Amino acid sequence: EDQVTQSPEALRLQEGESSSLNCSYTVSGLRGLFWYRQDPGKGPEFLFTLYSAGEEKEKERLKATLTKKESFLHITAPKPEDSATYLCAGVVGSARQLTFGSGTQLTVLP
Amino acid sequence: DAGVTQSPTHLIKTRGQQVTLRCSPISGHKSVSWYQQVLGQGPQFIFQYYEKEERGRGNFPDRFSARQFPNYSSELNVNALLLGDSALYLCASSPGWDSSNYGYTFGSGTRLTVV
Image (cartoon, rainbow over the protein chains, first blue to last red):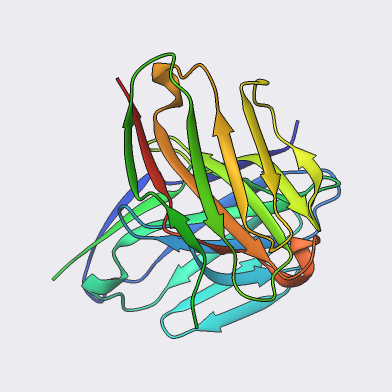
């Protein structure tokens, strides 16, 4: 069964304290790994797509990396406005649907 | 540019009732997918429609149905509502059917509460 697991479930950081979020996947025929950010009561907002092991992408304080079994979202010197739930999802199936993890709820304290 | 538009934003229904949720994709996008997000969990795939045809269906009962119109907008219908159907229902649009090439843009969702 295709599965995407995120850890930790919740993370509290002080402003400026860098850390990483983990996304491990057991998916057959993975066609891409997506990272989204979701604010309370809103839909997920696209951050990155990674396609092959070794690939890295950056956007402001965020950097996403991919290996054959997991992906990491590195947050460098976070700010309170980075507080949100971060979701990863694998693209699978004939419909190319997204299989999501449960998310990591990040809180950055000023 | 208008993003993905969903209506209504909030809805309260009674057990056993039926509900219809609506989605307008980004202009030019031909694929619409529906996801259910229960509080504290990631979204779960319900349906994908491309060019008005169903391309995929997740593990949801037959009480859930959907359709896509010639203008690419879509409706999700849920019959015989259960308390467990309470969730945020998300619509996502994509230019083509293969989201691995294009990615998905999500709407803000419809919050359905079943009492």
